Image (tube, rainbow, N blue to C red; front, side, top):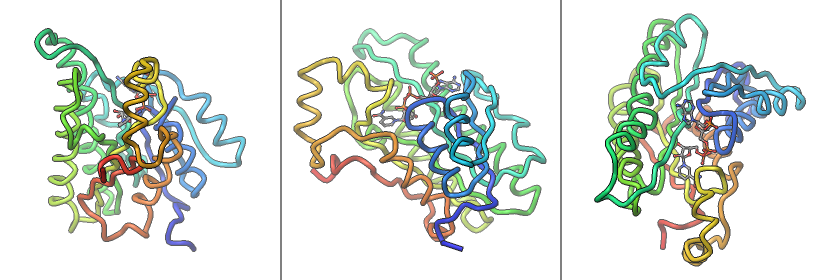
Length: 246
Ligand code: NAP
């Protein structure tokens, strides 16, 4: 079997109804994993794409606006892969940024990610198995950004937690890593593409000369879940068309 194969593995992908999460679910299924697509809306399109291609997938309604929504999700279910992809962004000048826009983003992007991952690890440790966690970080895990204070704080937090959890669990059978996508064409970045000046400035700085597609992120995530990445712990892999190299 290929070292990239996910045959026989069971994965949960959060926010799998659209964008990067959808592409990740499709990619994991293509490598042989059975994929549970978790979202606050049904992931019917994603499940349809996977099953039509002969893969195995189902949809699960979970709203991570409740940071403890992941409790009990994994117990006895045989999961060995978790991809924390669900995320939101709010834009406003820092001087006017509201508490609600702070709390909503931190709850979904950081607090839910931590407690969902904790629940996953408890179930893996209880079963005596092994596991892989991939968190979806951001360029704003490294850079400051502008007008997105809670998003930047949350994604810096995701990079930090990725390393902390890797330190605690590397010897216990769970690989924890992250990908840091660059500018990817999804709902999350619609406002940027709609602004011709921002769009041009962004494109001018990307060595690859184009926005990323969700599939550009999905392959590296599948790799980090695979046996080929067994000795990778605590990495935050930039998948950004070269943005951070510049
Ligand atoms: P997207 O199309 O808006 O996808 C975000 C996903 O998260 C959607 O499935 C969304 O569901 C889900 N979600 C949001 N709040 C949720 C909640 N409370 N409970 C459950 N699911 C929830 O944007 P995307 O670009 O694919 O974003 C995916 C991840 O990539 C995010 O973590 C984002 O921060 C990260 N990222 C994106 C970029 C980029 O350029 N696009 C760059 C760096 C990092 P709904 O469809 O119901 O809203």
